[in-house]
Image (cartoon, rainbow, N blue to C red):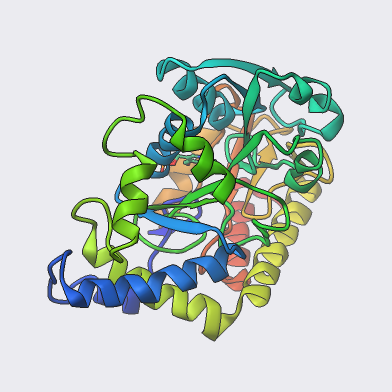
Length: 352
Ligand SMILES: Cc1ncc(COP(=O)(O)O)c(C=O)c1O
């Protein structure tokens, strides 16, 4: 099946073969060698000098980890879609004080929306989704970052964009940046990563009740031994090492970002010709497109027909279920494969 959903994504055959390599012990010398290859590559990918940690969990786990380790006063959750809302729920369920600034799905959060609120003395952390997959919208992280005071931590979810879009973590002053394997990295699900600034590490020292699995103290302690906190998903680490090599040294980051932009443009052009693009102009995601269902087609039927032709796309997320449909164009997909999908949709819907 050709996956054009916003993740998981198709994984190349050569990479899948890496998954079957013999196992090693996670406290062995061989493991530390692998770890020492991975960390510098992850730092290059994220353009950071901060610490980078590997977690055997999905990214939601790290949304929780980041909150548990950093919020001691009050967190401001910026919400303009389902994943922003999820981070707010996680913050609440972890017993942290929190507030939201919310915008409609499809509308970006701007610096002007937050600059007064973030100055309040009791706000110590701000969360933001870079690429809000539910509305296929890219929030202007760099602009919002300018409003965040020095003594406040900026936590950013780049789950559906890191590896496909230029996100300079240090330049944008992101204290914690988290993402996982199954989106733009083009790998199976099962690992997540977070970059953590010195400021966030210092802050975490004064936070109580950090739990066990996601405590930064433990991430730091095992990192100093070139190891992960518990038994990690070792097969995925092999395949990650290979894929990061390909991303950084075969394709190159610049070309990868360009390919994602090109695929986004192809999809938007097609959507504008036949339907419309859902999020506000200028804030469309580069890794997936939410097509606004202006023709009132039956989205479920389209998905079913495509499935019969071996293609999978997504309906709209949650309340946008029939109002939009989403086409993921991320990871190792090529523009030619995307064009083939669009031809199939044209054929099914009789579009010319
Ligand atoms: C923006 C965003 N954040 C978080 C998540 C949650 O990721 P996971 O399912 O890997 O926990 C997703 C998943 O689609 C996402 O798109």
